[in-house]
Image (cartoon, rainbow, N blue to C red; front, side):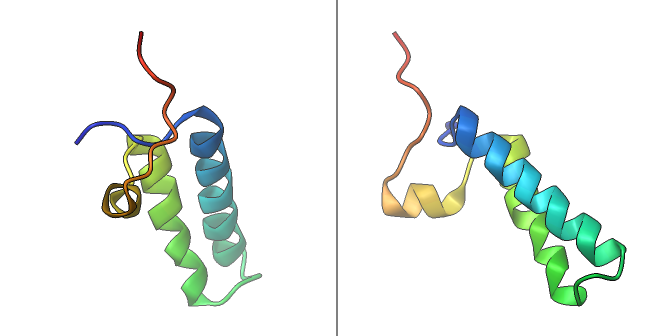
Amino acid sequence: MAANVGGIDKILRIVAGAGLIGATAAGMLPVWGYIGIVPLATGLMGWCPAYTLLGMNTCPMKK
């Protein structure tokens, strides 16, 4: 599993995932808000299976 999620993409995924989970835990969203685990996990791991299937990569090129 090579990293395919880059800097800003990682930050956005972590913030969005944590926001969804936090809002659900606070009772502001129904149970479906726990789907935030997916972007949170992919942001923390730096690898997204959907990007692999689509051939995408937001990581900067290594020199």
